Length: 87
Image (cartoon, rainbow, N blue to C red):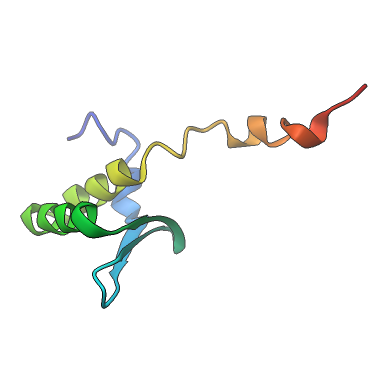
C-alpha cells in the first residue's frame, strides 16, 4: 500500500462516514459531504469496511469510492468556465 499513498495524506484521516437510520451512507472529506451511498452500493461499502484491517485501509477504501476528485489542478481550472467568455 505504500505505493498508493506516497505522500501519506491518508495518515491525517481526511475521510469519514455517517450511516443514517435508513442505511444511507454519507461520505465526508474533511467534514464536507462528497458522496451519498444507498441500497446495494451502501451494503457493499459496509461489508468492505468490516473487512478492512486498519485505519489506513479504511481511508483508502473511502478515497477510492469517492473518486478521484482531488487532482491538484483545482486552482488552474478555477478561472475557466462559462463566466470567462471574452469577446
